[in-house]
Image 1 (cartoon, rainbow, N blue to C red):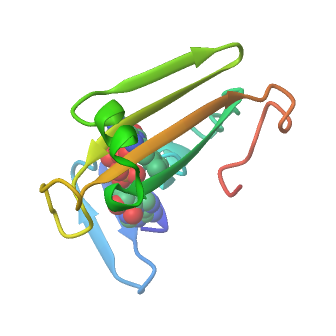
Image 2 (cartoon, rainbow, N blue to C red):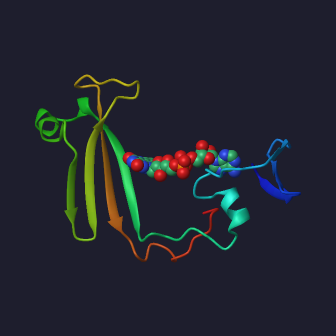
Length: 124
Ligand SMILES: Cc1cc2nc3c(=O)[nH]c(=O)nc-3n(C[C@H](O)[C@H](O)[C@H](O)COP(=O)(O)OP(=O)(O)OC[C@H]3O[C@@H](n4cnc5c(N)ncnc54)[C@H](O)[C@@H]3O)c2cc1C
C-alpha cells in the first residue's frame, strides 16, 4: 500500500501495482515505517532508542560438549555495565529439535547513546 485517501467517509487505498481498494475501515499493521500511521499521525517519526543489538545463530554441532551442557534447555542472560547478552536454543533451519541439529540464538545489546542523532527518519 502506498497511499490512503479519505473521501465521503470511506478510505481509498492505492497499492504499488496500481490497484485501488475502497474500505469502511482500515487496520494499519504495517510496522515501524507505517504508511497508515504517516497518513493519520503525520507528526510522529521513529526515535533512536539509545541501544543497538547484534545477533546471530550458532549451529549446535559447532559447539563443544561443555558449551552445549552450559547453554542447552535454558535461557541465559548476562547483564553488565551498559550492556547485556542473552542466549537461547531454537530449532534448526528445517525445524530440527534433535540434539546436535539445533541452533543457539544469541543477542548482544549495547547502549550507544551517541550512535546517531536522537531522531531518525522512517526511511533510514
Ligand atoms: C531480528 C529480530 C528479532 C526479534 N526477536 C523477537 C523476539 O524474540 N521476541 C519478540 O517478542 N519480538 C521480537 N522481535 C520483534 C517483533 O518481531 C516485532 O515487534 C513484531 O514482529 C512486530 O509485529 P508487527 O505486526 O507490528 O510488524 P511486522 O511483523 O513487521 O509486520 C508488518 C508487516 O507489514 C508489511 N508492510 C509494511 N509496510 C507495508 C505497506 N506499505 N503495505 C503493505 N504491507 C506492508 C510488512 O511487509 C510486514 O509483513 C524481533 C524483531 C527483529 C527484527
